[in-house]
Length: 101
Image (cartoon, rainbow, N blue to C red):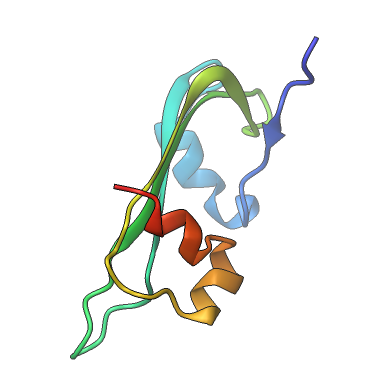
C-alpha cells in the first residue's frame, strides 16, 4: 500500500482566514503550478516550460492529501536556452525541454 502524500500550506497562520473562507475539510480541489524561463521585464517575456496539476483533498487541519491518479505534468519547449539560474531553481534541464513539444 502506497503511503499518502500530505502537504501543508506555507504561511498558514497568515493565510488561515482566506483558506477557511474558500476551502472546507473534505473538499476536493485541483492545484496548478507553472515554471517559466524567468521573470518578465521591459525587454523580455518569459515562456512557460512546465505545467502541472494535482487533485487534493482538504484535511481537517487544512493540510492537503494528494489523490492518486489525479496528477498531470507537461514540459513545454520554449525554443530558447534555459539559464543556469532557472535550471538550478526548477531542476528542469535543457535536455528535458528540448525533447518536449
